[in-house]
Image (cartoon, rainbow, N blue to C red; front, side):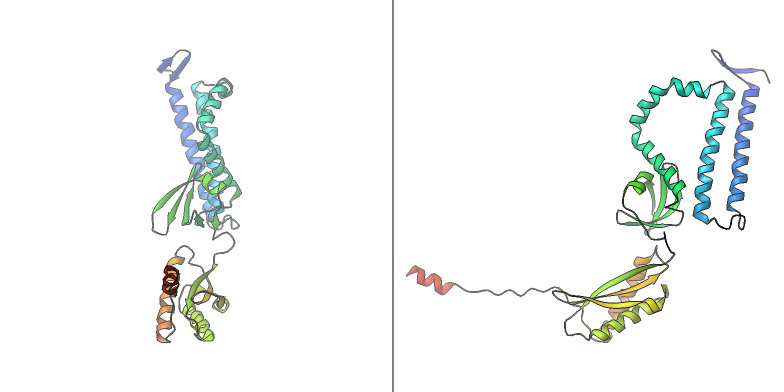
Length: 278
């Protein structure tokens, strides 16, 4: 156990040093495994949902690993307090060079502790719909509606305007806009719009589904149908299905969807030009 493996100046690494490091590593892994089993065990913490449990575990995991690394450095013979004090200037330089990285890390700590964003939340970031799969210390991983994984810097979530469709409730109100030709039966159009939304299986609270005449447009009467749905992540597919139903019912009832038109009137000045020439 006293056999020296590596010797650099005053620092000597013996067999028992490696054994101690291995024991610290295994104990750390065991503690994290026990905490994970406890936090995610069903019925153990009934007040914690999946997102809250994940955030709690991530914070505890980072803290335990920092403590474990400190013990490993002390075991090797490196004084952590002296190391931090002696490398203060170096840390300042590194901090300036890695300012954005530290910004992302601090943002990750904020996300995990504040829990404004959780696992399985559906976010709208820069016009893209993303379902959060994991929240790391520097980046978060999400899945967009095209089933493509996206790596998102945490600072992008904390510093920009982000819409969390899952923050308050599991179902959200959406709308589909449509215009019909002037002269159409308004009551019939409203009934068709509501029936079209009713027919989709992903619509919730059907009694709250409502169609409205919202505006007199330049070329059309503008309507919108509002509905609630739990299928937030795939809502574009739901809207597409509802539009197809609306188009079919409009065709059956001979209701036209107009397109913008412009009438041009030309006034001839040939007579005036002829008089000026004389």
